[in-house]
Length: 322
Length: 285
Image (cartoon, rainbow over all chains, first blue to last red; front, side, top):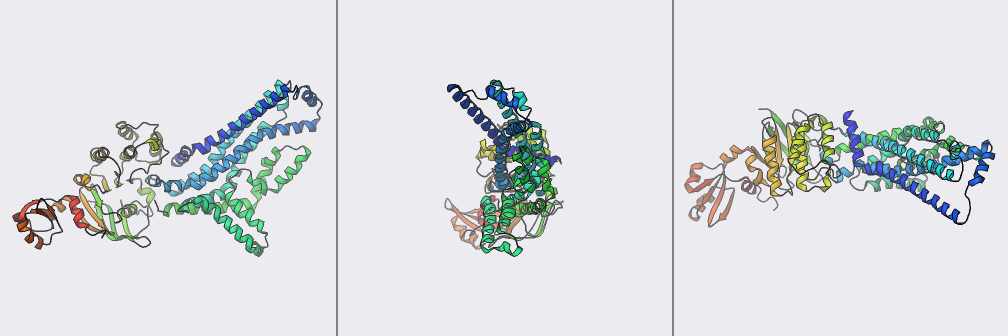
């Protein structure tokens, strides 16, 4: 257990730039852009004598009925979630390339000879990298997303209060705690959902003698094209799209948080409900996303991922090209 | 004496070359063995087999374990330095020490710190900022702090200047080596390790062509400096090698009668490099 902890720590040391600084910088850049946009709006507004918000806002809030208030709250939630979404995408990219390099880079620079001179089993090494990709990276991203989302919300509140809007009343309409809870609870589901991608990418990383990226992308893409050309899926009474959606996409893109929403019917229903002033958070709410646990797609993916990880462990042992 | 490594019928082929050709050898505890051979002779393959880094056919027993299946246990007792610069480039001195201290049960942190204190390395230094010599100092400090029974060195001083090279072997001898430890070393800089070796193994085309301790080497091989008039006699005794120096001929003999040799000229113990060159004649031809 202690060894495993230090193995994960080693991954963090090596990939501090991707795991920590990439989301931090993304969040910071997003906030700075927002502040600049607000300043621009304020300057333009002042120059043209237009009062943004002001008494109109106050009146609007005062006169709003319950449904309108919910919509304002939803708007604020979207503001908060937007930075989180961006950080999620960056994290997806980081995890993708982390996995591709995880079992390849040290073979290329031969530092594998140092790691292999220590009493650490290949299984532990590979699993520590799986854990770094599926748990460590998302946990760090969620913490940073929460912080940047809350800062975003506070900035909006401050700007509005400069315009004599009772910002705290407005903020009361948003759901920061719900947003935080949603993000935190999404981590285990993300881990399960990402396993097939992580498995495939790490398998390529352990197996490829050169250019793991090319193999990881080319193999599913070429298979997909063959399947499309020859209509192979027709043999199973399935449309060609099935292969792209359930094999290609699952092998490559499941490392992106939220990629599971496309596959969840109930999430689509929830999106449809948005028109009725339902909150956008409901798309991401665990109530909806966790229905995925009942879908065979998730569990077959986990199984396939586990098999690929086992393959990666095996190749980690036998590949001797350093 | 107990054997640290026993190999019998060790065999390994790559696609179209034979790296190890049914090799048999035995390495006893408390020895410093030089495994010496030309490029591509199979040295690294032999070391990799001992370390469980490659598959092979035949029997190989390292400290009572099979390196193919019991690698994780084996690596608690075995340390390994490959040719320089295999430490990961991103790691800091502090991180490397922390990591090894926490994953290696036989690591002694205080010892490691003491070795590091003798160098110019600082805890926050990254490997990528170090010179080759400093990387080897760090690696050596890590390895010497591990109480291992077998240390495998594969070209450990490649590309280092002479100060680092001397210091490397000196540290090993003074601060590390004792009768419970065994060191296997491969290198091309034979002259530098000649005086620290207790055993010598020559490998050529996947075969062990010489396996003897240094005393036996001294008894078996002799070099005689013969003046021109006796050269023909010496040549008739089938010397391993002949070379000319200052108008005299130097002959290298394997197992020739001492008295006869002394009657022809001055008898010396050949250096390992001369012996190596004579033994490997025609390797690249």
